[in-house]
Image (cartoon, rainbow, N blue to C red; front, side):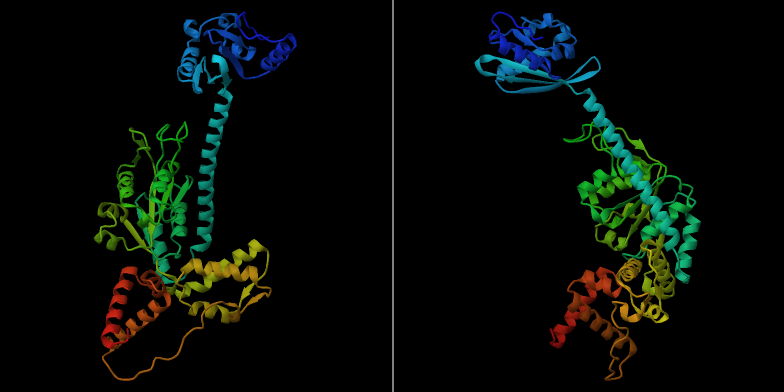
Length: 465
């Protein structure tokens, strides 16, 4: 029932009955203060939320209420003083109430209260479920990578056997490993294989691609943040990928793309095995094994001031150089057949590679390395209607080319240098950038840029620019 007093709102009996029924039917508490500053209206939900008898609230001034009801004056007083809507959240007897006060015409103020305890509980449950989902997602990615690693770390070449021998020696210990190699050579697969062979195999395998995220987002993904550390932060904070890797392996892919200002924090993590959440002061210990990978020349970046020398030395404890696919052509047939078997099983089809098709695959230089080979095999499996994959099905450039014309006899070293510059020049005409030239020719970008400058200078000297 709604209780009012003389001097309160006056209305016809029928209207009063309807309003009383409406307000008492609300789950939200409602309280009204008249222009004389006294509480004239309280519904049942408000009295119940406050745990205060209605009679103790009616006809009282908010400022005169007992200490237990002192929640009322601040929100009402600010509304009366400013003439603007006010809102606050109050902790009362283990419950959280969302309070509002709104000015009404003729000097009235309407206050409402809503119990948001259950909403808060659900919000915290959603946060926990989100964190669990992220943890399971990373663990699943690790398991998938480990399974893929068992299938893809294959090769009979001496170069890959040496790589695998080194990995088997260092996997059982927690030394930091730096995987070096061109894009697509399988650094992620090898990182997962190291984790699978290590004592941490039952822990999480967490991967982050530093090239895929801007610096600010990368920092928030790597490092936890504490409750209230910035606007919009979750009340309970958020665990970063470093903490999610606790007890397992953190794989930092493309570490050469980490901004200089973030490299300092990564160095601290590697040295101390501790993190400081964003907005926090106290460090948190983490038990992780770190594997980093890059396709960049970190030594050159150190010399150019684009990568911290101390971080490089901390990462370069056990460097593992993964050779590009063109330097181990004997691995191409077994890799191709491995991918073929996997995709045939996935898409429930039957495909075979003819010997001539395998020869064509071996003759190709594979600038995209193992990833390019894998993608090509999948494309052939899903797009071809024929069972046999023959050379004409392969979208690869024809092997070989026109023979080199020998016009005069010159010292071999001079001839090789001239041919090299011609090759660089042709690649530059075709691709237009040192990055793409380096990728196509299998050399580092800085080397490609230097040779392009030499080629341009030669063109100017000979008047062919």
